[in-house]
Amino acid sequence: MIIGIGIDLVDMDRIKELMSERFIDRILSSEEKKMYLNIAAENTKLSYIGGRFAAKEALFKAISKGHGKTYYTDFSILNTENGSPYVKTDYFTNNEIIHISITHTDSHAIAYVMIEKL
Image (cartoon, rainbow, N blue to C red):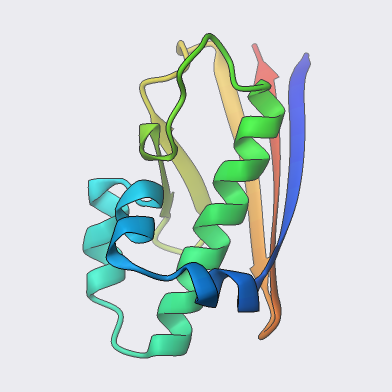
């Protein structure tokens, strides 16, 4: 049974304006930040942040903010060996599956999340 869906579109120029150490620390989990710090190209870093921000906003829409205080850092958007994104979190029980897709262009990032309960 589907219990939530969310989608978010991010303007990369807006993300570029917001880019600061404080913004990055607010958005990225420690695992995501390790990956971010290993990215050499600035435009790739921007795409990474934009995609993670869109994914977490879509996730928040899918859970409707959930049971109170929820933070961006409560969720890690990581990648499998083949590059597919997945969500790592302690927020849910083991009865949910989170489906996620992220894509980018030079000007936008978009993410789609669907949460399924077994």
